Image 1: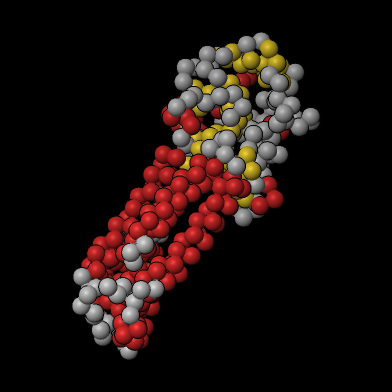
Image 2: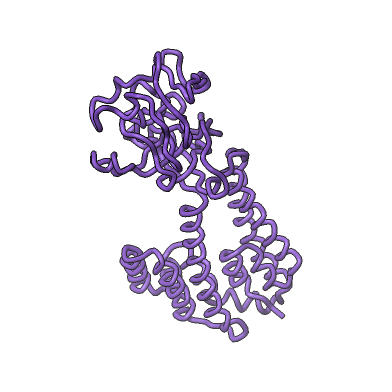
Length: 357
C-alpha cells in the first residue's frame, strides 16, 4: 500500500521515529525513538549534574538536532521507497496537503501561502501572535488548528490518508503542550539558567549588569532535594527578610561558608569556624580580607560584628570578592527554604565553559 511521504515527515517532526513506523519501518522507528530519548536524558544529566561534563552535554544536544533533521529526510525516503509510479505521479499533479501541513508547523501561515490561501496565511500569523501574548499554553493549540486548516483548505485530499489530518493536529497540540510542560518542570524542579549580575563572586564568577558580558550559569535545583547544602557550595537564593526590608528583590549568588549550629567569627581578616580558621585559599585571592568594613549600610551593628552561632536550617553565605561583596557579614544568614539551588556549571562565555567550584 502506498504511503504519503509528507505525512511521514509530519509524524517524524512531532517525534523522531513515528514517520518510519507509519512507513512500515517499525524496527528502525522504535530504535530512533529509543536513541532520541536516551540521548536527551543523557544530555540533560551531563549539563545539570555536578559530575557531568557540560561540553559533552551540549554536544549531545547538537547531535540530537542532527538526528531529528536526518530523521525527517529518512521518514520521507522510507515512505516513498515502496510507492508505485502511478501514486507518485498523482502526488505531483497538485499541491500536496501534507506538505502544506508540514510547512505550517515550520512557520505559521507558510502552509496556507503554499496552497494559495494568502489572506488566511496572514491571519494565521496575526492569530498566533495575539494568542501567544495571552498564554503560552494556547500557542500549541492554535498551531495545531492552523496546521489542520492548511490540510483542510488544500485543493486535494487523498481518501486513503485524510483521516490522519485530525490525528496529526492532536499530536501537534500534545507535543507542544508536552514541551512547555517539560520546560516548566525542568525550570521548577531540575535546573535553570541564570547570569551573574554583579562582581561579588569575582574571580570565580564574572559579573556584570550587562548579561552578555556576565557569566551565564546553570543552577542545579535537584541535588538539594536529596542532600543538604555543604560548605563551599555556590548557591542562588531569594532575598532574606532583612534584604527585602532594604528593597532587594532579585536573587543573590554567594558561597556557603558557615553551616547550621556552627560558631562563626571574624578575626585578623579571616573567617573562624568553631574557633578554627577556615581555609579559603582555593577561591580567595591572597589580597582578600574578610572584614566588616564592607557593611556601611543595612542592619547595625553588622551581623558578624561579634561571634555568632548559626541558627538551625540556616547558612552563612559570603561572596568570593570579599572586598566588594554585600553578603552575610552585613545582613545575616540564609534560611534553607530560600535557597533556589546550587551553581553547578558555567555555559557562557565559551572560553570559560565548564564546572564551577
